[in-house]
Length: 225
Image 1 (tube, helix red, strand yellow):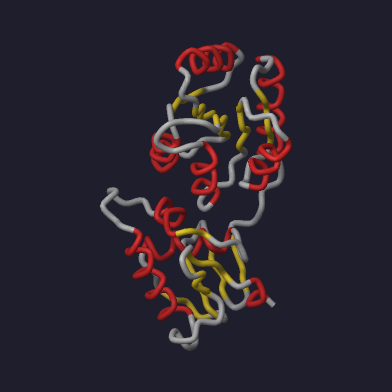
Image 2 (cartoon, rainbow, N blue to C red; image 1 turned 90 degrees about the vertical axis):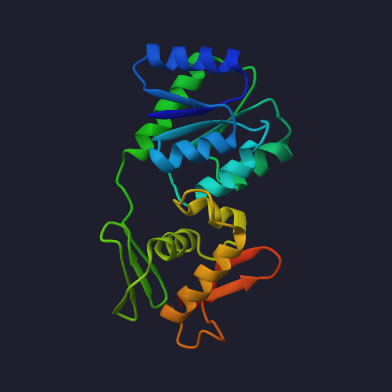
């Protein structure tokens, strides 16, 4: 299933109809907020993502998306400067297509990304230093000893372990929580405090779950050694 995120109704309908005519299932969203909601309820196999959209732009969506999901993302944008392409790719995009584009070429790029995604998959077990997190078994161990996490704590730790060393902002981490939308960014601080109590030898002096003041949290890369 392809998730097409585009605020132009005309372009959205044209791309959707073309991809569907060539055998691909397509869902649509008109901005990043709608797209995040769609991903939480039914993660897509690939995302086609406009950059300039109201409410939540494409790059903001992409940073939040990469905290929880790994399916390929192709940016569709009129921004064709080198710095824009670099910003898009460094934010987590897998490919970059500038408007106007050929529908046939877009289809070929979509199929190429889906083939790569269908290749040998990475392990469902994430490791970082003494931390081991099994995505399938929904289990966590610290130095081999099992620890019990809440669903929210598990999702936050998984997001951090998928991108060790990368700073995830509180909004990024908030987007990982599959809640009813009532949680605030302060909720993230509470969950992180609880994670430290459950996983750190000295929660008051955390060794691997680092606070990046004014931004969010990350796993210290050196803690993996």
